[in-house]
Image (cartoon, rainbow, N blue to C red; front, side):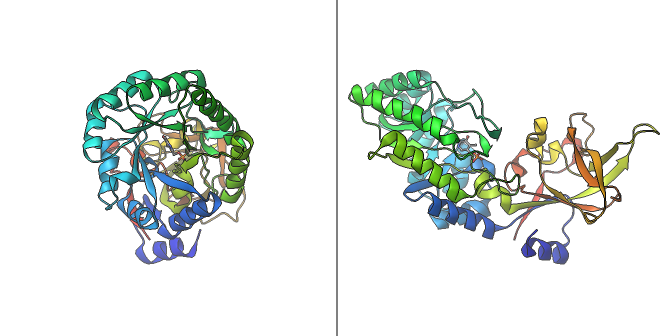
Length: 376
Ligand SMILES: *Cc1c(COP(=O)(O)O)cnc(C)c1O
């Protein structure tokens, strides 16, 4: 934990549970992306953390924004950013939202099928589009699976169709899966993208842009390579697959921008066992799946947790949230190691929680308010 978090907790003593966001870390992450991937425009994936303070900072730093809905678009416009800095990157959009976005001046849209192309062509004539291709997410902790994108053969037809409907076909996008631990994961996707570029060139359509997506990991979640290593691996794959004709590139980091900037202060509410002979303790916190830790679903994201007794011996526990829903268990299949001396009332600090937490908190389920946050 850095000194700024420590000082804020000591001085302000905010009520638990709450999320602290350190904007200096967001700034460092932005700068590190910009340095590691020069000539690549950053479109911050707003869904990872849409706090106005985060968006304002990224706007000042020169970032563009990847938005999934009108609500996110309005948040970004409120920073003062012009519509030219916004991509409507969700492949699943209502036609009336495409129309409203277009009226606000947004003219960059993601598609992955003919039906979505038709919507854009009808209400946002002449806009720029890119087609998302499938990516299996191997190597990532939170794969985005089959829900988004189409295969490369179909992508060619989708882009050609968009071209015939008068849209400006920019290029190809993909997402290698969130918390991607393998910098080489972009290589396969870039090979697919290059094949789409080549086939369309044969049909007389020149693509010019590759959207490399998100997937850049939070460093504090696992031991992962730094952003520079990702940048080098991606550049080397671009060289392999595009030679001297490297297209324009953009990235859409979400987690990699904000996860490490967040720290959740929580509290132990109860420690118990289920039978007299039970060797395994259950530890219940005042935050769980419905309080913002939804990414513990399938136990794929394992947050580092600090306690005041970390010098003591540790033993496995089942870690659970406070609500009256049986799915509100954080880690059970793979038990979590916590100090044997842990006490009810102890403060626990959950690290790397700046992404995908605040907005995943439920709206007063069991009377618990959405996760409060403080910017430091
Ligand atoms: C969620 C999302 C991102 C951000 O992904 P991270 O893994 O958090 O970096 C980027 N692009 C799109 C289209 C997304 O849906």
